[in-house]
Length: 432
Ligand SMILES: *Cc1c(COP(=O)(O)O)cnc(C)c1O
Image (tube, rainbow, N blue to C red; front, side, top):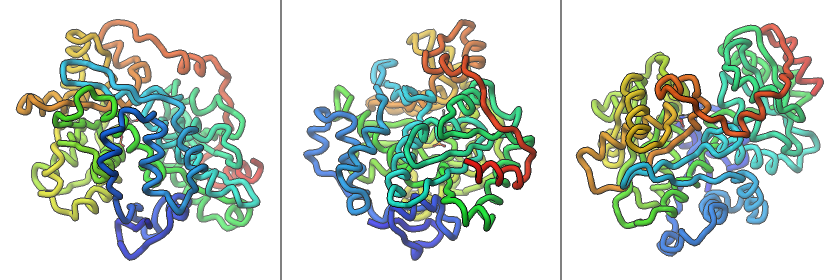
């Protein structure tokens, strides 16, 4: 198994290099060279495997030769210290709850696996690695939590002062230990620019083993396959056609679903559910890919106008809209429609959706109107308490805060505040 760049299949590298580089030298995203198909026996006995065992079996097909079985088992079980249960919402409709991790969102799966994988791949080096990330909120908290207390790794997070929510700032700044939060007097774009400058800085390159943990890293994508298999294993009737509805922004989650399908997971269809940032539903309709500036919505983790993983999906389907359509259907929803779904699903089923899960539920609902006989699983990507103000306003009642979120709200914020330039950042990095 090797990994190639979506920009140029001639650029190939090992898993280890793909993970440590993050992005290919030509700016492309890394793709696995093959999708090993799991044997029929795996699927007929899948309900007897634990989440960790099943995930190990999946990961192993890609990582054999790169990471030994014992180490991989440890990485997988360390990353999956949380469940991904299926909750019945309506007859034939299930929520795959991906919010049982430390930051209450599905990005925990990718971040925790990436952290442990990076630590393993660099364990032989004589110096610690330093992970530098710019964040506008959720990615940073998942990365911070994912790397927290992982030996051999130091993390430096840059976030725009005043540019993240109170909960997000608490999640970013209260861990301490190997996590350093840097509050930048500037915008998210400034933070991203400073990260780029730091990577290009010769004195930092000489002194540190600097690496990134951004969302396009292949080691964040692979673990997102695990819960598609886990969802299938939990179904009562595994013979009915299975439809996954995925609330999408950068399309990493949906791409991981497609990888699972390529490995033989029996999926009838994927729904690409978006808010008004409907580049992919539009592509499925017209065959034209039109990236554009993002629009702000209440499902803001999906406010993406140029989805990064489109490149990976296009590579899978050889840039042919017809091939996409054979397995994917797209729907887009306004904020008003999303709110309506949150209200109705609570009134009719007693289930509280967050705005992202609501978009996914909506996609499933639209599809099932014409396809009654399918089993539908929608990905509930965040706990509703994470978007408490919005959800409480819609439902006109209080959303209980899970203990692990409440716990970090009382802690003391620790951050280093700097102006938006490389000099003070360099000093911090060299002192870690
Ligand atoms: C990141 C995120 C998404 C979008 O996932 P992609 O992989 O970028 O498509 C959806 N919901 C929540 C809560 C997220 O944080």
